Length: 192
Image (cartoon, rainbow, N blue to C red; front, side, top):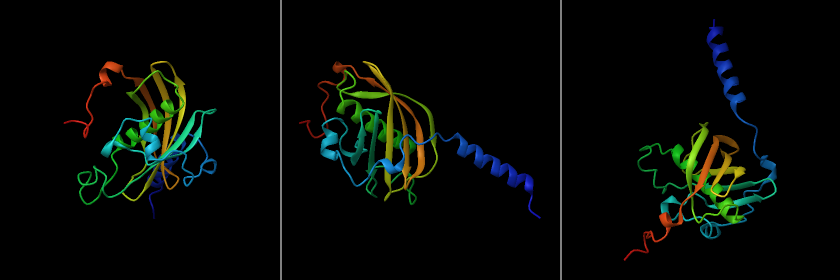
């Protein structure tokens, strides 16, 4: 006979886990991943990341009235983290998931000129939860909503999905980096 105490405890943990998830920022029916509004080249006009640190393939939804943006990264076996995280079982590191969300939020801030900043840097993360694994071959979809923006700081909530299953969520803060900090720093490939 099964131990009902263990089953009830497990069911209780699952229900607690599900109830802790926030409602969707944007219903899946409101955006189309095949409708690209900004490709990698357009993203580069707004974001400074290059080479292996570019974590966005495309933007597929922008709604300036609601402060929502949706983008994605198509993951390949050639991602810089695949070889070492983990050997024979590559999983997208949580920090890279958060980086992708930050790049999407930064793109949105620059695209609509919402902050006085040439570069927006990480200011912090809150309430981040990892709810699933992400592997090479997945399309990692990020939904971001602007909660607050001031001249020097922004706050966004984000949710990340693979096949409409939430794999990560949280709140991120971005800060305007001082111009003297970012000006004149050589970019790899531009150095002699």
